[in-house]
Image 1 (cartoon, rainbow, N blue to C red):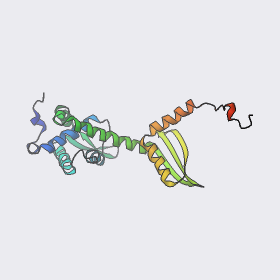
Image 2 (cartoon, helix red, strand yellow; image 1 turned 60 degrees about the vertical axis):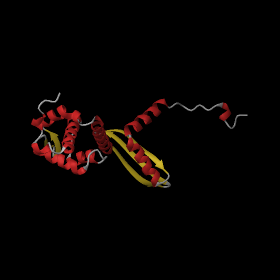
Image 3 (cartoon, rainbow, N blue to C red; image 1 turned 60 degrees about the horizontal axis):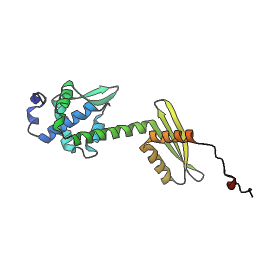
Image 4 (cartoon, rainbow, N blue to C red; image 1 turned 45 degrees about the vertical axis):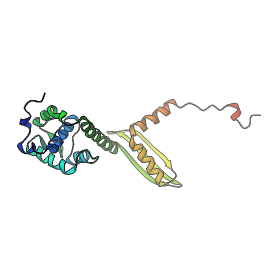
Length: 199
């Protein structure tokens, strides 16, 4: 049961229910995600997939900073949004005021963005012209450890970029499938009928 929600809501917030709900939604997301989030990243997560209207989002952020449920913190040379203790308490108490479908949607949007950013950081590509076609050089790393360094051939630049995009969609799965194939690969033993010299 919600107890004394007034302590988390300023007077001017009570008059605009949609902005209030967005504040709860943003607080819920920041409280759930185990990831530092810059202002640009939170904007993309909340508005990029139509979860929240941009103008409502900016108003919600402004009010959260004013009522001190949110702060902009300097961490390791970067600026990140961080919930205050008041914000964390409110996120936990009032999350059910926002439909679960919206909570799930913003959380999924956040996971997709942070996965994309990690993939772009851990997987690098170089597409270079070859004698006939293009080479797609892919390097997959885990921090400083190089897990895979592979070059694939593509007949044209369009297909080279397609190969890059497909790997980048799920580089972990690509790496695992390559390793699985190597482990399961067996020596080719032709049948006698495959030998053209056999009569």
